[in-house]
Length: 85
Image (cartoon, rainbow, N blue to C red):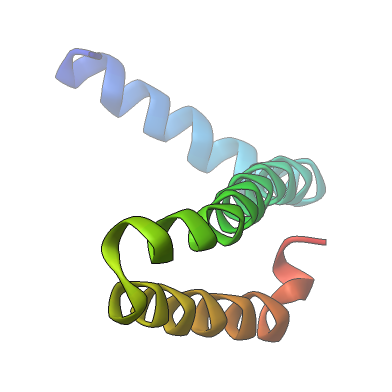
């Protein structure tokens, strides 16, 4: 945890970097976005793999609800795929 003075200084440095070198700042932002997208993709794959077990353990209605949520997730990931690629 940063002190208020350190937080203020960090924000000042970040603002200066964003203004002085926007290309560098954009590359850093792109790397962070890719990292989040990879985790979301991994989570989606794990949830799809666990769908049969969810259906067996909790029943068809829970499996169907899980499948609907995962389908919506897949549609959203496909729709916004440029953010993660």
